Length: 73
Image (tube, rainbow, N blue to C red; front, side):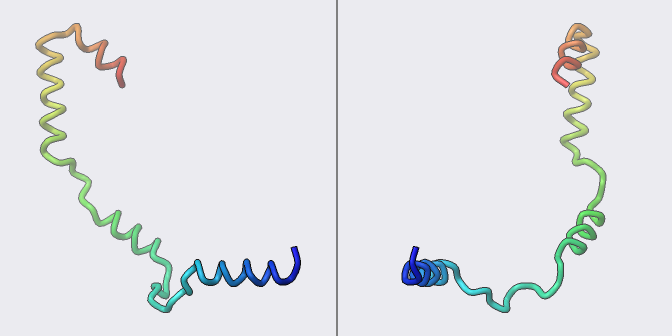
């Protein structure tokens, strides 16, 4: 590669990549994300409880299905 090729590649890269603008946040966003995750409620939604209840009822109705459920866990 000669200097002309290097200059051409440099110019192509500068044209392809947009310049970094000042719209980026000035601080690290990870601590804010951790606070947001910690602020969420831990309680599962109602349909999770309905699914678990349905599995319990099905297991009580047909006890032979219990090993099948344990196999797929």
